[in-house]
Image (cartoon, rainbow, N blue to C red; front, side, top):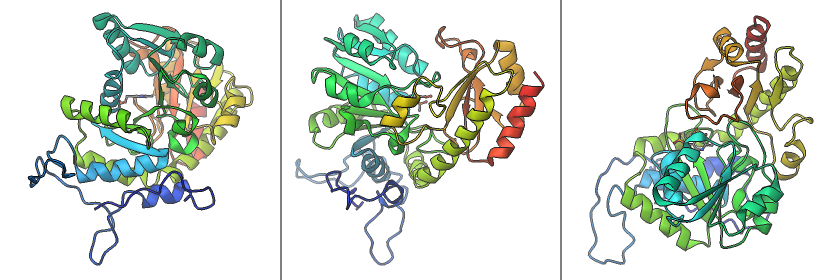
Length: 385
Ligand code: PLP
């Protein structure tokens, strides 16, 4: 048995701090000789019950105690009920199943390209209509959202780090539009979209939630009182079979325990690095809401409790970006983000990446190494350009 997460409706004075929730949620009941951590349960099937109404695990594609432990922890942090999936993209596809085949969806101009491609493919196949919006322009989003069946926001966006006004969107979007927020970059520590009126929160748990670049996993969180959306998404997971592996769920939960520490260190370093990068002669632009000059700064200060750990910088062109990346030795040239190790990549190296992303844009995921070591590596590589 796994402990229930702290009820989200508890008053502020009694609500546990996120650092405590990250450590305590999803633990087995305390009993003599019980393990402190939920064990990994490798099972394709479970002993059954004749009563069809019995709440059983049923089958390995439907449920697993190790997923449940992770789901309770993610749900407790986001303030809702979580379902985990084999990847962030599997979670995204499950959400898209809630869009009517010929429905209307508003999505960001710049967002994770895999999600945008999936939405475009769907539009070509079923005739759904896609409206692209600048997430930082709330009026534009609200206009595009009129009559839309789904509004899909990513904030901050990947890789251009734009910030959306989630509370204003939540207040003004029609209840007829399913409001989805990809919270991968911010994590529930910096913003809780369900509190701002989102219907569904999506995560590539591959990133900061797991945090060690050793797992591919996704998660969806719905409001605690919205059983119909939760059940619909659960039904998609059961039927599509995009279920997570128990070992991945275990590793993700282990990583989640230290999310507050990792994120605090990484975002403090990101702030220092962004401020220094701005002053470097080879850096044309630094995209990071922690900078007072960033277009998303005021909004992020108002609506988020931190600026995150991902910075994008614009260098002159593709060659400058590649030379810079090759000149780094501590920073690893790798895709993905949110691991303890600092990584960077030129996003336009991917064929499908949006043309609106500059050729010389380098996305940098700040890890938890010492900030001065990180800076020396970057500064040397930039100086050599
Ligand atoms: N959402 C965002 C913002 C992402 O950056 C990614 C992956 O990079 C995804 C979703 C997809 O997640 P996954 O790679 O775990 O399938």
